[in-house]
Length: 91
Image (cartoon, rainbow, N blue to C red; front, top):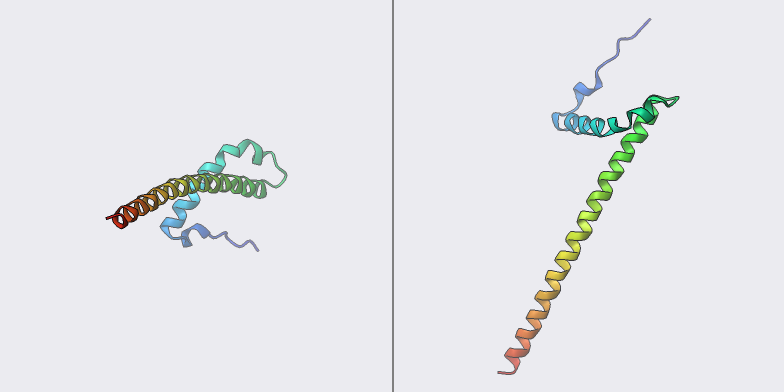
């Protein structure tokens, strides 16, 4: 007896469904690779992981840049504070 397949996506929130669709859109770039695999679905998952890892790497790079910028701002603020305190001591 055949059991009808259920559309599991209908149980996702709208936000999660949009996220999944974005991942699938990014993964489609690798269609030529995963369509030639013995297990297409598994290969498609690996390609999705590649795209997610690229996103993580990009976010890490942006975070490091922001940390450098903020570190510089804090460093300059501390230097200015020290100069101000020294000038007040000299009064």
